[in-house]
Image (cartoon, rainbow, N blue to C red; front, side):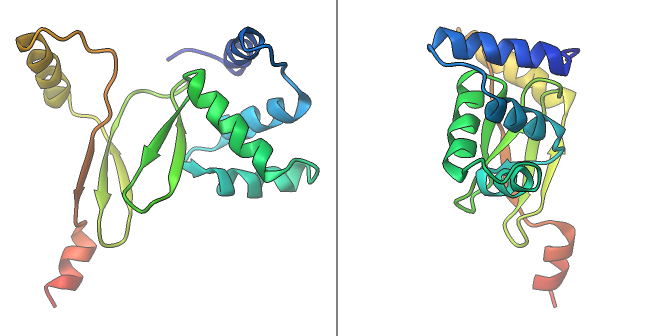
Length: 150
C-alpha cells in the first residue's frame, strides 16, 4: 500500500462526511495516534496513548472512533482468542495472517504465498470471488511447547 497519512486522513474525512459527521481535532488525533502504532492495539491501549497527548479525550470517543475507522476500512478488528478486540491498520500495511500462541498469547504476523494462492484456487473452485480474508492459526509457540514438556 502506498497511501500516505494525508491520503488516509482524506479517506476518513470523506467517510465521516457521508455519515453526516465531521473530522474533529479529537478524531484527527486518534487517527494519527492509531496510524503511528505498529502493533495490534485495543481501545484501552490507544486511550492510554491518547491521554498522554490530550487528556480531554474520553475513552468512549476513542472506542467510537476506532469503530468508525473499521467501518471506513482503514482499520480491521483482530481477535486473538483472549476476549480483547484489537485493531490494526489496513491502510499503510500489507496483508498478513496471524499465528497465535494459546499459552502466552504471543502473535506473529505471517505471509505465505502458497496459502494465498491456495485460497484463490479454493474460492475459484466453488465459484467465489474473494474480497478479503482473515486467517488465525492457533497453537503453542516454541517457548510454551518447551515449558509444557518439562
